[in-house]
Image (cartoon, rainbow, N blue to C red; front, side, top):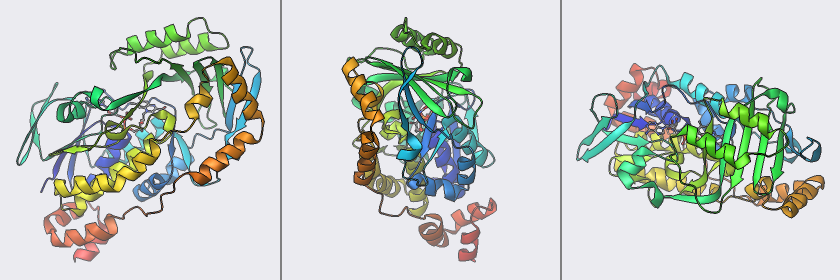
Length: 424
Ligand SMILES: Cc1cc2nc3c(=O)[nH]c(=O)nc-3n(C[C@H](O)[C@H](O)[C@H](O)COP(=O)(O)OP(=O)(O)OC[C@H]3O[C@@H](n4cnc5c(N)ncnc54)[C@H](O)[C@@H]3O)c2cc1C
């Protein structure tokens, strides 16, 4: 019946998947390498079908209450004088999209799952061995265990992907930039504005949300050739960022000092993950592990929430038949992933390569042109016209009537009031 499901990675994709699997009557276990939830990062966007997923989880009111509430972007010179401003609120569609600090979303998802899901912090899968009826898993620290299915939700440098699909160099595409996020002294930023300072090929910035006492620093720099570094060596990451920004003016020195002292400092390449298939036997991938679109897309959280919802729903709809479910998950989600991996000019605008490029960007930002371009981009962007399947109400209720053992598991946890009615 494929009930016991191991998920690697307790972030947005992993926790959303665990939530829905538990609601559908499966028994998810989440293993997270970090000793606690990783709440670092800046704002992430909940938009499109991700809003429907969050509504169905009952967390959308909290997401709205915690919204980052940022007014716009201000480009400054070395003397901290604003040379151009973009009012992001005026450029938005006035729609339902919400930007929330990543850490707030991760913590909300934990609250929504902690009573129904087994969490194992401070461990990682070491080996996976698939057979006809399950997967034997060994861990770096805990004892070996057996699961019916294993799902990698462990981000761009996924261990599950490496073990089941091969080395990451086959799937990661370098996009020419590196970025870091960290906590920052809020006195350095302007309330409700993202302030950015550019020199050619680099951007340092500070982001002060209206709803948070804490501010976040950004650093982005360009390298045409990939850097070689250990993606788990945070001290090395800090050195790379320090070297890239050494001697720069504005408030870079103070932002760097805050970043170097921050235990949640986060650094990575602005890369994408592209894979011909997201499953191999009893193993599948979700979120950045399968289809990272990079922070430049602004779509990481949306793809993770929607992908996890679909994967859990398809497993329920197929009565746990992973071959059917994995295929249907991919068929349903691939189109959105392809759309979101087409990144517009965001990075070029945020990190102009030359002084002339910066001048052009600043000039455009002062004109209504930028707003017009954003409007055109929004109108031309492909829309999600197909509705998100409602696995709870339709397919799952039907199949639970056919599969009474799953209905019993769901009812025992009080998870399917509508199915209780349908099955009785
Ligand atoms: C600390 C952090 C800060 C981020 N900040 C931003 C941001 O500001 N803006 C932005 O757009 N995106 C950010 N991202 C990426 C963003 O979260 C994702 O693009 C998106 O939300 C999809 O999430 P995900 O759950 O697929 O992957 P991720 O959010 O990357 O989560 C992967 C999880 O897997 C865990 N993990 C990794 N390897 C293993 C292993 N071997 N075993 C067990 N667990 C493992 C990680 O610790 C992490 O908790 C950040 C990611 C992290 C981890």
